[in-house]
Image 1: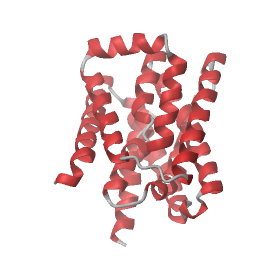
Image 2 (image 1 turned 60 degrees about the horizontal axis):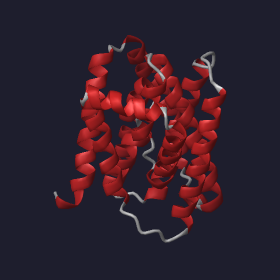
Image 3 (image 1 turned 180 degrees about the vertical axis):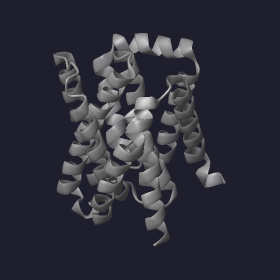
Image 4 (image 1 turned 135 degrees about the horizontal axis):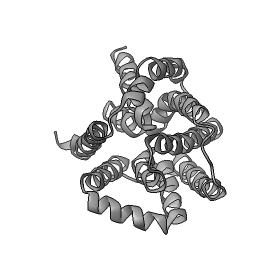
Length: 244
């Protein structure tokens, strides 16, 4: 029962973050629930419904923004990688230390955000290698549920305004979520949780009541710093959790 209350708290807190940045429930909720002792497939079943609800709402409200043919092609490439790697990890006894991989991704992402020069260099590199990057991003998300750590880099390299950045993130997150839910339903249906479905309306309510208002009023520098701190701290905690 205590874990259930903590789970709903996770949804509430990270729904606010996802409302502002387009990502949060998966990129922060995954390491949080892993730290609480949940199995990876159970984490997917608990977090995906709320993430999908919010991402769909964000994508729908930004539906008038241009969506290029190149972006659609990139999403197909990314989707193939998500399906392939998630299917692999759900069906094969693949020995991979997901916690360490997640931590490394988070810390790397925070390091890039702390250095404007490094961030600019990464953005330039991404501009010329988008298809390779989205393939990597899809593989990482399929293995760890943490593609959002790389998606933040991708979205800021292709968009400059906060509305466009959040719209790009929400499109990919909606795609991630629908693919993952379908894959779970086929390969690991027992991981689909009634509790996850019950929490989804709560996440959507938090989006409309709190998160979207913060997004509208957001000052970029403050939220950029706050997100960087969250990413760095979670990366460190996930890597060191077995030693503290």
